[in-house]
Image 1 (cartoon, rainbow, N blue to C red):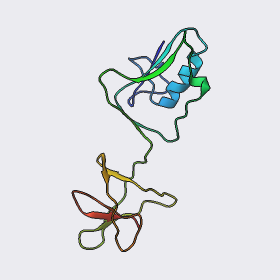
Image 2 (cartoon, helix red, strand yellow; image 1 turned 135 degrees about the vertical axis):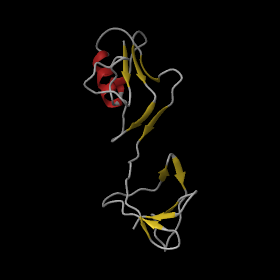
Image 3 (cartoon, helix red, strand yellow; image 1 turned 90 degrees about the vertical axis):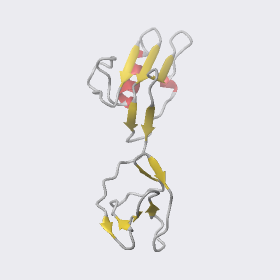
Image 4 (tube, helix red, strand yellow; image 1 turned 180 degrees about the vertical axis):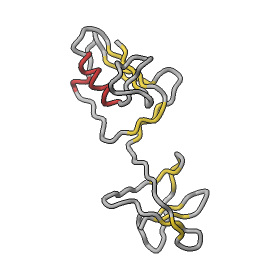
Length: 143
């Protein structure tokens, strides 16, 4: 049995190649249920970025047997990214000397910043630990 997931799928879909599931969590639930049936279970993860809102954990209930293995694999020739980060949409405002500042919201703490898929190095604007500097542009600090 094959179960398919795609960033363009739907968790109410049957999980086929033509109508894949949206999330890896839904694919995992479907694989666990299919495990009760005899035979191998193959979860095919199609190209794209999967934004995980919580940790994806695998336990004994996700294991197969020699006769009925369970596997998770990227679709042939594709690139799959599992992303546990958050997408921020800050409103930037000028600070000084090319520095931009944006609030990131309360209760959100991070130690890495990616812009357009590229990790940005830390910087230090007036001693603020959460400040970041864009490699190819202006600095940005989180107040």
